[in-house]
Length: 76
Image 1 (cartoon, rainbow, N blue to C red):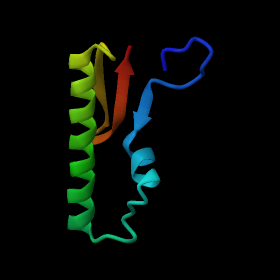
Image 2 (cartoon, rainbow, N blue to C red):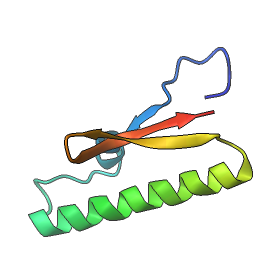
Image 3 (tube, rainbow, N blue to C red):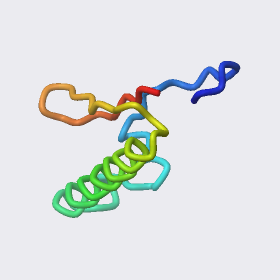
Image 4 (cartoon, rainbow, N blue to C red):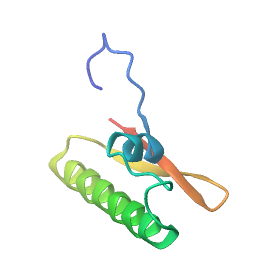
């Protein structure tokens, strides 16, 4: 993301992560899906907090639509 020649976005959607991990409401029941997605969001935040402590990123914010967490925006 720091490379000036890249066109990558600083926004990462949780749905994109779920899709990459093949986590779907169709496969899991409501409770299992909710628990799995919460765990993934917690892992993402733990990784970003570690990167913040190491100085790789300045900070990040979670994006919401209503009460739903939709992703994170990373500031370098």
